[in-house]
Length: 599
Image (cartoon, rainbow, N blue to C red; front, side, top):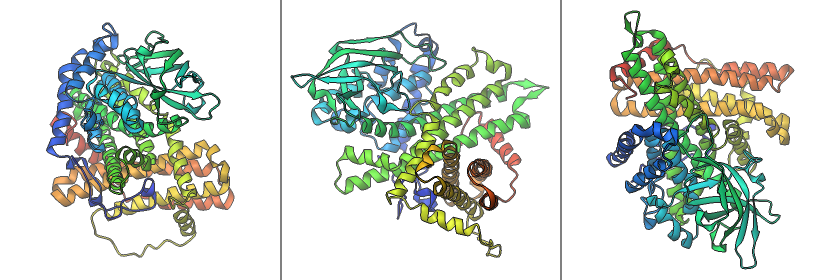
């Protein structure tokens, strides 16, 4: 079930900042096969038949057996075994197909959270780090839903700083362990059979992971948490009270728990991003349909320019984020295949493939979750006063959305992680960004060449804009690192500004490449609406990069350096005038005619 896109010289993670890529080398959602689309349709049908009719009951917790029962039904359809190897009863899907499943389930509110926690952070540690005996014992049951899984990392005093956890695993004379400690915000905690628990052994600096069965004993928990959103998901504080764990249930080797947590979170981040896009499409469709139905001043509100702007902007951001997610997902698949072809074991190849694109995963988690927040917020606004009613569908979407900017590492942490990883790879010689950054620094002091011949290749002007946005990012990053050196990571505000610039560059470039590829296949006239979306997103990305870049420069530069860098930023954040208002109206008219998010 491969979705391989041809690339003669594939980019490494983070290398999008310093290299261009051809449109034909990227994967786009239009390339999914009929089989893959049928898998997604199965997920959507399951949501509409089994989950959406009972979301109120899920949120009320009036029947605590309802969520595990739904997971059982999902297991019968194979939806819990998407990433489990076929040898252990799963489907062993490639990465981008598992992404497609995550998107299709993403509109399932609390159910989507429960399923992703089970199939992702609950199951994948065993898939990737379990030994043969552990895989054979647990994976077949996790793939069917006979066992439900949860992930116990967060503690009251260790949120983003996961490695500071206080839970302890005490070795016993027979080689087993006794675990004592408190975990909080544990999704699926109320009904899980298997807990992936992180604890420190003796005076170890790093965590160790354990597979803990509920039946081992010594496990108690608080009542269900009362949450702002995702109320239907089970969220508990869990206490391990001298819980006995056999020696054979230590997972991935002593002291490797933090590495396991980080690598599994890399996967979780991009899966959360694409799930958020699934939720965004559902919420946007609700807004579009309401705009077609609601009348004011004698006409439907969808005919008003202010509403059209909202509907179109929702769709443009969704389209852009979706595009970037699947581009990255296929890059991960390609890397996995490359490593496997060199003889690397499959599980290790999958981990290394995702790790290679940890920068993009972090940025996309931020982008996808913030797109969803935008979509549901404007969705409430389209509904007006009715949007504030708990009887209208935007209420749940609005509340459920908010957690995504906290899940899988806060968006602030992910912004800083992305920039910090670029710099660490640069220092190790794995990613050459300082050379290009120095070249840009020289360029901003030179006289620009305005006499170059016009390039008439498709989207040449837009590609130049993106190249210049990369230069702006490199210019600021190079100067800031040069000033602060080893103390750069203390400048969190500047790091977040740079992350925003990197994110906009990656998403805008991905969107333009998708549209260029579609235009080559279908013709310019047939893809004019896609071009409207790509150019509108790019125009907004230029403005965002200018604002973020200016904030960063003003945060550290002074005197002549300040003046020169601001001039450089102005030079690198220019775009030919484009009537985005009319482009958005064309997009909105299409959406209203389709009565939903459909392209």
